[in-house]
Amino acid sequence: MTCWLALLCMVLQMFASFFFDDMFSSVSNMFEDSSLNALGWDSVGYGFYTGGYSVLCVFGGLVVCGLLLDRFGVRIVGSVFVTMMVAGAAIVYHALISGNSPSSSLMEAYVGCMLFGLGSEIAGTAVTRSIAKWFKDGPMALAMGLQLSISRLGTAFALVITPKLVGTKEFYDLSDTSRPALLGLGLMALGLIAWAVFVALDAGFDRRRGSLNANEEVKEEPFRLRDALEVVTNKNFLTLGALCVLFYSTVIAFKKFAGAILIPRFDIPAETAGWMVAMLPFATVIFAPLFGILVDKKGKATRWMLTGSVLSFAAHLLLGLAPQGVPFYGYLSMVFLGFGYSLVPAALWPSISRVVPEKALGTAYSLAYWIQNVGMLSFKLLAGFILGGAAAAESSANGPVRVEIMFIILAALAIAAAFILLRSSDRNPGLGLDK
Image (cartoon, rainbow, N blue to C red):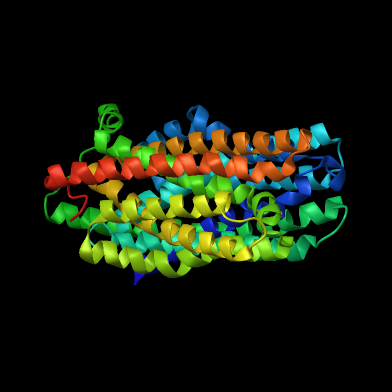
């Protein structure tokens, strides 16, 4: 039972992180024009702000901190970056409520989002690495599925509650745009308390495991730099990383602009768009643990990754090419994307622990998150420029379709990466990817 309590304590702060990260996703239409909000931000500015999440991660921070995780452990390094995550969120909140000029508030929020992003990603890496340790000989895929489930409840909560907190207005003042951030900070305070409990539980776990290893005269090999070099030359790990960045970009970058895509494409109000996108995290709440059990019991992880990638491709085909103004196609696309968003992660993250030794898992997971963040930074910025450029050219109706063409291409490449993994597993069953 202790392992499940530890899991709960680990993921509560991830719930808060996911909420804060997605707090504007369902109301991103209020940034279509700078005249619509007191902040003075437009789609390009909003894309710039959200891209800040990945900057420190991409430019070395995530990789270096992953090495630190393997060297100094999740309790010390994880605690530092959980604190950084909360501090970054506080800076974003101050920027939203300060009343400074649009450029000043945007730069302050960008800095806060950079700190929040690095802290959140390292915290997530620490959680994933800890699950791999606590559930090494148990239902790891189920545990990681539950992690995804609880974390994405934060996204679902944000998508549903933010339109209610902000409202539907012709002009959004500072109190409107800052209200979701204030709620997010409160959730993070609760997450900090839960993380402190996990640190105590993890220290006890290591003491018990150390005593067992001493009795059995088993010693763990220390982490060395050459272990990191072996990770970056591991072809199967690199393919998993490619699938990670391609697939997650079709979901996470899409969510950031979901309101700006769904509202004009299917002629629906912001609140309906929020519920529509909320189907993604709600689907993972139900299906991620179920698919985790399926992976634990039946294996075939590469086939599930391929299936999920195909579902993402089908979803974006509908979003980009379905008839205009028919909400049914929006709901159907969210069903496909929701199933894919449950299948791929439930199979992908445990697969990394099968191709990389435990002593280098912090490095491996941080590299995977780094690759993922390269995509998130690039494609969020690109989506913002596509939508902003369409608005500037007075062809805003074409903006969502153009963005969806980008996502369709990414989903097709994800299918190719998953197929390569499937072929590699079939040719080398000793890898254990499909066991």
